[in-house]
Length: 475
Image (cartoon, rainbow, N blue to C red; front, side, top):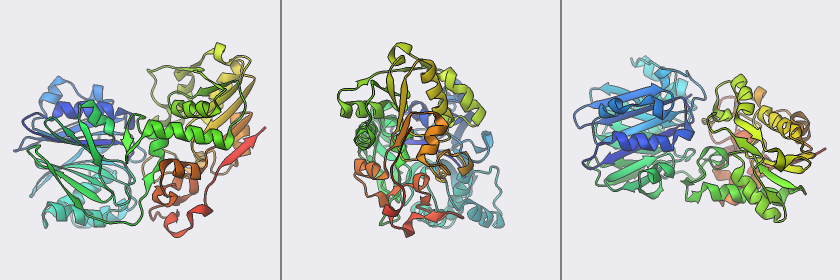
């Protein structure tokens, strides 16, 4: 398996692609902090630079100068499985008889081993344990026998799972979204060409205009001269599996995904949270920055409750959720947040966050607020309980580590030390998104997935209303 990442691709007219790609990766840095890379093509040969670390650490002026060409792709990586080393950093590149390929992948395949074994029997040698290399080898094999569009279609028919891809085939840039649209991908127009990106903020950063989202199962081929693009609907599906967690947590709030501004979605989810489980308190506090939009919507719905900042964030500490080990996550909480006592002392507090995964962070936050003098702490969560792991690329760990996997809401409330705890319902998520819940990927909150995964249930075979739901607990 591979990762939850950010991908970008550009095709420009008479302009080097490296610097726009570099700026785009900065805009997508929230989607991955472990490695960053860019592949370009100058019409004659492919150029690549991939390095561990943040975008600003992975590239210097000499690196960008060496990435010649007006077309290219980029990638920032957040590993959920596979090695955390340079062998799995992307874009992945391969050269073969029909030219050169570069490939950036956001998502996870669920049949990686079967495809890898088949390709290995045909003589393909692999250098990493990630699924991106599997996709690249399968596509390279198909390109030996078919034209570009047919080759991609054959690969789509062979691989299964979650993916948004940006690809270079020599000086042609392609974008591909999996048939169920699990991961986001959009297309935009720039002054000098076109761009494909995981989120619209990358297009905004370059001063471009968002055209639309890439449709599930659609291939977009950018013209090498930056003058246009072609689209091919490779697969038609009756149902999608959009990841609701993109709206709840991972995407930047200023991104537009599937025609919805993420910030507006989060505020509306906060309003719905108040409607479902509002409680009288003196002040509503967000967990920065993940709970801010939810708390704003919640407080607006409550009308007479103060919205205030009660936890000050140290901007120089990374997001605890995507730190690779539990001990690093625990250490980071007090480094990351400091209570503002005047906002908290002697007050009843409603604390709003987007999710509870392992519970450790929530427990420590509540301890911080108690130490700062809070009389009551009521926790409200802008998503349903996470009861199962994500196989499509978000690091929600194993069931053993998920606090809600084998505990009800009252048990979780006791574990984290809150006076009351409530989660948002699945129905509220679907209604806010204006989407039939059958067209969302809800595997992490129902235990039923939109893909066939060994040992798991698929939601394509059960009635959606029979799984999931809200939860409330009070002391």
